[in-house]
Amino acid sequence: MLSKTARRIAEQHCDSFCAEPEYKRGMKLKLPYLVEEQAGGRTYHYVRKGKGPRVAITAQPGTAEFGRQYADALNALSHGQAQVSAPRFQWRHLVSAYLNSAAVQRLHPETRRVRRRVLEQFLHDWAAKDYRKLEALDVIEVLEQKARRPEAAITRLKAIRAVLNYAVRRELVATNVALSEKVAAYAREELRRDSGGHKAWTRELIARFYKHYELGEREHLLMTLLLYTGCRISDAAMLGPQHERAGFLVWNETKGRGRYAKDATAVPILPPLRAAIDAAPTGDMVYMVTELGLSYSVKGLAQWFVKRCREAGIPAGYTAHGVRKAAATMIAEAGASEDELMSMFGWQSSKQARVYTRTANRQRLAASAARRLYQETLQEQGAPSPAPNRKVYNE
Image (cartoon, rainbow, N blue to C red):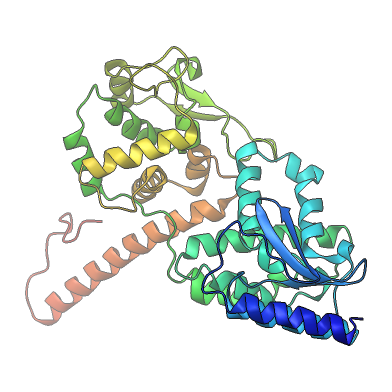
């Protein structure tokens, strides 16, 4: 508990600090009982006397809110009302344990890097929270910070669910609050409603790209590789001559390689792809190389492709993954089954394949229904119906 004199001195410092016009980045705060720590590339502030309980301050230094939280923390400590969780029950402790768990260590290094970065984005807000007392509204509040970017919000939700699933498995919490109906309803209504993920390329955009980049150019090769194999950009960066076997490209997909056993993907090398490989400059180990003949990193190849797309007049938002979605759409519209889609695109369940087949089937059924309606109206009007073998609408 703070003495009256200590509290008076601290509040005087607080008033003078809040009167400063601007908090300079890197400036060391000098307020009584205020502790500043660096962790994970971030700065954390909390009020603590000796080895007693500590009260976190989440506001930005130099703001009025920071001053208010600091004053409230002093008042809580002075009256012995500081309610803080034990370190082992704090969110930061749970996240640290999760990131060091065996399950996370088995993930692909890039997946681990992204997962850590996503969790660190809101760690400052949740660091001192007691994860046992998290509520659905806490999760929704964090998701709303990314409301303008639904895909980022969904990625954040997946990360939170993964951490809390780890806590459930370790019997640290009874249930995963991020899986509650309230959070699911928010994600369904506010995030997934406006989020279609990566934009699927249209046939017109693909034709525009091919018109700009002719056979023999590296851009032409990458588009053909993505389109005729349905591979991800992470696979396109490592595919090369060593993956060719008896007219097929055979490779183990990068995604999910460390989590579960997956059969190798085998796709026939169709004539357009064979021509693109033979005409473009390639490396000894990988097809896609830089102007210096060096291989690309996954991120580097993805960024290079986006730049080339902009130069070809492709609107913003269309990426390499959108070509994969376009390939799946065209194959489904051609009548491919779910098993065929799963084999080509490496999906482990039929759920993803069903998205494309259901859409394609709906279009075919709509065309069939429209044709029946057209024939019915012609008969009612007494007009001759079209010949049976003549298609009125293209399916």
